[in-house]
Amino acid sequence: MTVERVLPTDDAYQLLGLAEEIADGELAPRVAGFEERGEFPREVIRTLGRSGLLGLPYDEDDGGGGQPYEVYVQVLEVLAGRWLAVAEAVSVHTLSCYPVAAFGSERQRKMLPDLLGGDLLGAYCLSEPAGGSDAASLTTRAVRDGDDWLVTGTKAWITHARHADFYNIFCRTRGPGPTGISCLLADRGTSGLLPQAAERTMGLRSSAPAQIVFDDCRVAADRLVGEEGDGFRIAMQALDAGRLGIAACAVGLAQAALDHAVAYSREREQFGRPIGDFQGVGFLLADCATQISAARALLLHAARLKDLGRPFSTEAAKAKLFASDVAMKVTTEAVQVLGGAGYVRDHPVERWFREAKMLQIVEGTNQIQRLVISRALARGAAK
Image (cartoon, rainbow, N blue to C red; front, side):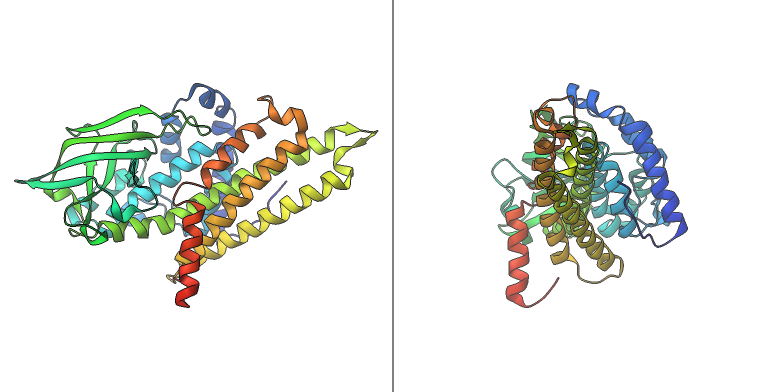
């Protein structure tokens, strides 16, 4: 199914065309093999970087693509429709560039061309084994030791932890609560930074998330991003934008599942007719198409608010919540339309079904999104 898109410039249409070309030529033919092997596609990510697709929403003067979020999220949607783990990697990398781009010192900002150009791949180290939703209670700690920070603790569920070139480490440098959290920037190979074995996940097996142990990890004092105590604010601002990325991934995944189910419903015949002619199937597909369109509209509304510099946090939470729930529903229905064929690996819908569940969890569970939205309603404000 062709998605009718409205983009702000001719350049944006060309950029989306490039994303579709790469997605069809480089991603779609390779995803099944990489997922089967659980292999992280580092060279594919480099290809996206060389094509200018890894730093899209950042300023061109810093090495980014200079594109509005409205365009960036639609590129992510295209990538997710071919290979969700790659789209998630792009989203996480974009998230990982935010601390330096928004809060970095003049010296740190000199790294931006390499970060945004994709020469360096980023990881975002916030969640912990005993703390995911309650990020303000994180326990990873950093103490000063001369001109360095010594970091001790464990982070969990870190996307491409074993393959990143730089790591944003959110750690406690002061007392309890959000004001005691700071952000440090560490390079790959830093002494005491120890990525662990990849997790054995239900889906996105090529994403290879893992824990990272910090065993007196020594980070230079000038790698503190922003001021001491700014870490929680940096993390939350980054997550607001990151939720738009996950919503875009969800819309792309749902669209792929719907397209496959519609094509199957035209070819599969029962009782002498294509199954899509029966209302039991046709109406189900119509509902899926409507929900995807609604999710996309909610996502683009939130992205446009961000582009205008207006409050968008609550709308981002709504977009992430609704789009990921839609992805779970549509992939479930796609399996049902295919019947037994949908339960085997001969069709990608079983993989999409497994992958959709992750989108309801990352960048804040959907229960947390409901908390964000309900609190905004209680305040009488949309932020």
